Amino acid sequence: MWQRLLREPLYRGPRLLPGEVQRVQDMSLSLEFSRAELACRACRAPLAPNPRSSGHAPLSCARCGAQHACRRWPSAIPIAGLDLGALLLGEEAEAAAEGAEAAAEGAELGAAPPACAECSAALDESALVAGCERCGAVPHVVKQSSRAARPPAPVTWLVASERLAPISGHAAAVQEGLFDWREAPRVAPLDDGGFVVLALASGELTAARRIVDDVHERVALALEPDLRVRWLRRDRVAGPAGRQALGLSCEGERIVLHAGDGHEVLDAATGASLEKHATSSAMVAALHGREAHALGLHVRIDRGRIAVAQGDSAALPGAVLSRRGVKAVRRLPGGGLGVLSRHRGVRLDVVDPRGALRTFLIDPRDGSLDGLAFSVSARGLVAVLYHRRVWVARPGEEQLHPCLDGSADRVWRDSVLLAADDGVWLFESGSGARRYAPDGALLFDAEIYPRPKRRGPAQLGREPAQKRADRARRHRLARPSKGEHALPEAARGEAARQAKWPLRALAWLLGRTALLALGLG
Image 1 (cartoon, rainbow, N blue to C red):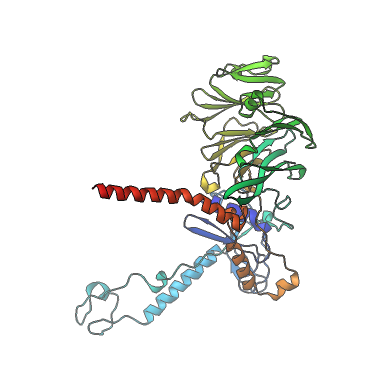
Image 2 (cartoon, rainbow, N blue to C red):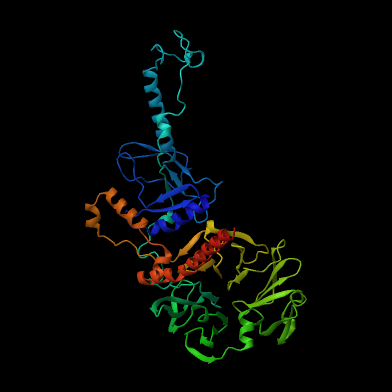
């Protein structure tokens, strides 16, 4: 639970603007976070924790001498992205303040003892059990005090770490609007650690004669490992969305874009178009993992086994050639080969460019391959997406380890997986692009929403802190959802009307059927 709650604050905290407040929620817990300097709660003087201390001694203010509870982050709760030297400040102070308030209320109750409701005699502690000494009536004691009936006050604490230093500039390391698509894109890794994205950008809808026509921009872009744009191509196309971007594959120095009217070959270094052809059966087989050019060989699936159509079969390990129930073969970055088979469970065989073999057992209890995807980085990091779960194996490891799980970690059915040298990428519909470390820490999140307007130091100095916090909170809560960014207002209304008519027709049919049944009865 803490892993999921603190993933967003640890990533977004250094990127927050002064006075900006954001919120995350998991189950019944709601967490608001902002960036602040360490300061005394009494006099607001800056505090300087000692990084070499044991982490259990209280931190005292040099100006007023106030004590602040301080301890190391508990090692029993390892959080991805948080170093072991992080400090927790102020959590025990809140508990002590609540205890003092409860003691003060108890003292107030003790100063004015309750009276009997029948005879108005003073009651002591023995009267709560035996009854009043004068009339013998047992008083009714309310077990829930007024303090317990009030809503609980939020607990405020600070996490101090060197990794949470402010980051200047925009939150995203790429141009604004670069990660902009309607449906989940197609991705393919490059041999040098980068990757290529093929997507349909947000288009325009025109309601001519009540027929909605889609106009899209087919975008193909190559990114470096540090998210710098290598090249970008945009093509204006019209027609249904499902026929525009069918697939994407990388064959070393060449990139093949598959579309409904054919395929186009691009140069991986410059993005220049080399040739265009009509889509053949061989291209469709390569797109669906039936054929691949890897290890200098042309391999294909023949009756559930791997057959070498061109090249020396000695380049493949014998265990891969003898494997039965082969379902897909993929070329890996650098020229390796990935083989997915279903024989005594679901198995993934990864053959690196030197011929070394690594075998992973994904799920021996379920032989279905629906929704399974795998990806291997240029340095050998293996990632598997199966049943909305992500497993990762670092280079040299022979066993997969869980990384992300279900909707709590934002893994959806349309998520597209890509393995990188430093973690895994997840792409999804609605301009979603995130990168996670192998241990689950969030490394990158595409910021498609506009950031608050920057204000100068003079303007920030004239505004009180509470006003800045309220303004940032209103901006955060007023952000529209992802779906509202996809279409303009008129187009959303037209699309909603077009989507509601089947429901109205169904309701009319059910009503007529019910009336007919009543009439026959």
